[in-house]
Length: 188
Image 1: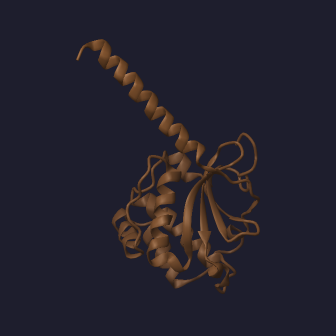
Image 2: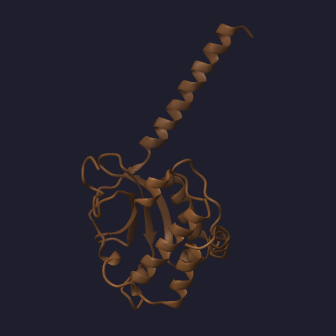
Image 3: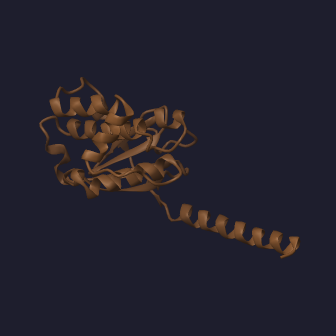
């Protein structure tokens, strides 16, 4: 094959790859909702099971990975933090965490900020702490995923991940921001 033909084919193939990436991005749902961070406020709860999860998720990478495996959470796919996090929580919904997590999907704000929508079962707020225990479990899974190296993304983005409750829905929304409740703010 001559050089010009190779260049032509590579241009065509690159355009097809670009179109595939664009169509994948355009299929992401725009999720324009109000969030609240009330679950992250106040005193931390004291719960032996949650304390163990927090300890393991923030400990050694092998402990974090073992904890995730015990919960039935497989290694994540995806090249970005939101794709890998969605994969992690979808895996959790298919495993031991199915009583709490119904599913997860990648969403975007009105100004194209990526996020992960975590759909929860109706009983998530029925713990004796009005949802704080469920919130803690979700945070521990994110921390363990990061510690185990399953969460793609640069350290600043991962460090700034926020978990907030969507007002009026059984949903947690995870997005990267330095400011609380900034999902719908423009230009963050």
